[in-house]
Image (cartoon, rainbow, N blue to C red; front, side, top):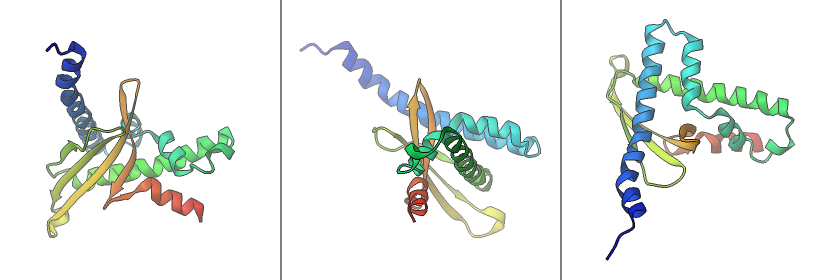
Length: 167
């Protein structure tokens, strides 16, 4: 029985590609943390690196699903900036809080969007050890993966914001 090359390549390369998304996120997170700590919390340089891994527009569109089409281009830009800043600040807060801990990045499942679980055990400020596990959902476009949602304790940021907007 002959097995097509494309199947073999997909079978052999897929795990490596999946691993590369988790590795990519881990390396970027460490770069962001190192820059933030080393440069006296240089906001502009940190923001540039965060923009490489966070898809603020995809996050905003999903948060404002029912209203997005009704917004003007300027309102979309402003919503993307506000919601993107909120998402970015949360990501940075998590990195700083658990930055000294050994973080483990692992792809969960093989679907689309990609889901990366980041877990660690930390002892922030000498208090009792604390487990931490967050899942990130990533879009992939033009060979570039970027975060568009974060789940903390199983709660999606997008779903939380959708509930607030719908009220």
